[in-house]
Amino acid sequence: MDSPGPNGKDQGRRPVAANGHEEAPDVFLPEYRFPTPEAKYQHQRAQAEERFRMDFGLWETANRDNPPQSVSLSVSAAGEVRTERRNDLDIVLSLENYVTQFLFAALAAYGDLLLARQLPPTEAVREFEHHADELLKETFNRKWLFGLRRLELLEAEFAERFWPMQREVVEEARYEFEEDVWSTDDEPAEESGTAQACEVEPAACPEPASSEHPPKVPPRKRGPKPDHETALLVATIVARVAPDGDWRSRVDDVCDALDDEQVPVPATWRRNRNVRKWSLCDDRDIVVKAIEYRLGIAKQQKKPAPETLS
Image (cartoon, rainbow, N blue to C red; front, side, top):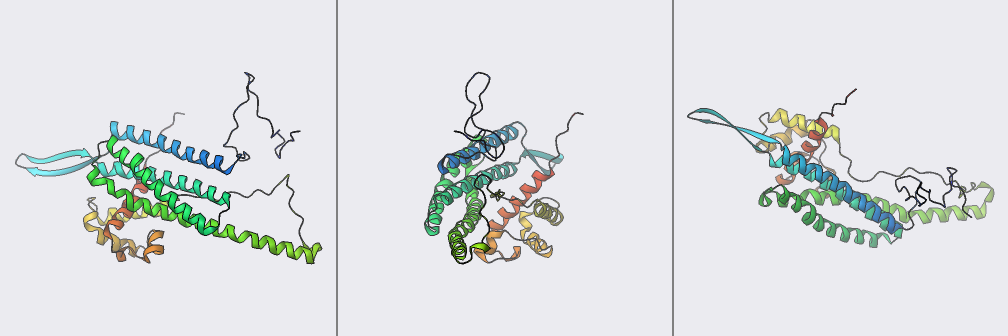
């Protein structure tokens, strides 16, 4: 017989709609439990894909109908000439942000699946790395190149910029997964110690939590955590160093200014490169992409909120 759950509702029956058919379960409710870890993974992956499709549709429509423009001034015999053209870099940066969000969500979902399978940590990490490599290739072809072609962006100029930034995304996701997988490996030892202590001093052991009312532990949010405050600070410094917008030709000055303001470098630089100052990173392409990424976040923050009718 089905018994009511903690919220007093019958957990064993689905609600019945007015037409007499059972309604589909609301998988977005916190108490919803998937029948298998694989089912949960498939749902989370589908959510990541659907979110990307929605973002991609908005991105394509906005940049096709009203693309950002860059202005250049030149002087001719007729006087000063103002030329406007589509700002392809701004378009690519926004696509880059959507791809980053998708990769984090998809990798976090796969990491949860591996944790649920309770594989040995070293095997789990190998599985995660293999899956991440395959996901990167798939995302490059089906999302990144597809997006460039949809808006006729130059593949020769923008295709390869996918790899440095998205490999950093994978590194961040892998780092978070390893934190979880190794801490999970330690849990049985703690439980074993508690059990042994209870055999010696049963009166000192706490009462086990009721299975009907398990303690609720808020899930730790995983995935990209854009540092909006730092991004806005980077944008301010770049605007001060290069008020004309041509900061790439003055990237060394920008790095010195970022160091003077003690702006933290990307976490992956500290872990993988042992670099803790912007001016000490010897790969200028990586530096430029890191600054561009933060400028993209700052630009999104500065977008005015849509007006509402009262």
